[in-house]
Length: 128
Image 1 (cartoon, rainbow, N blue to C red):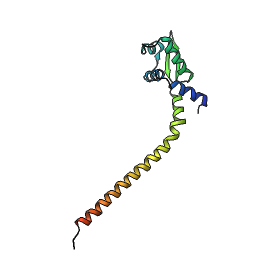
Image 2 (cartoon, helix red, strand yellow):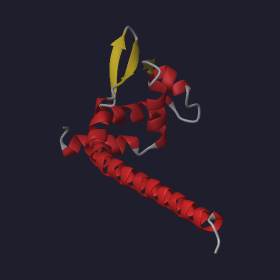
Image 3 (tube, rainbow, N blue to C red):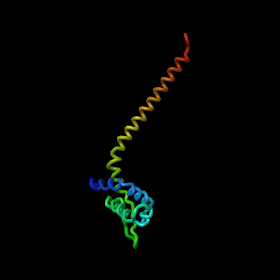
């Protein structure tokens, strides 16, 4: 489990839509800073580098110098830590609640079917 400061950095990094888009681009594999900057013509290369710096501080991006280029690699481990800390803890609760709801609805359907069957028997039975 990551310390709270590490998770805070991840949430801070994910808070900006440009940084989320950068991570989406990196899902397909490592890209150079230039390639990433080209995907955002409305932003300067410097602005993209600042966003990459925030992602790097959160350990979501790992830069690796290859020749003259810097390749940025996605590191999904911090996202997994966030999932385990936040989503994973609620997962069991919601799964239990959904199973209980399903059973309640199925029971309700069975009760309705039984009631229809009883009504059909009383309507179609012998009359005195």
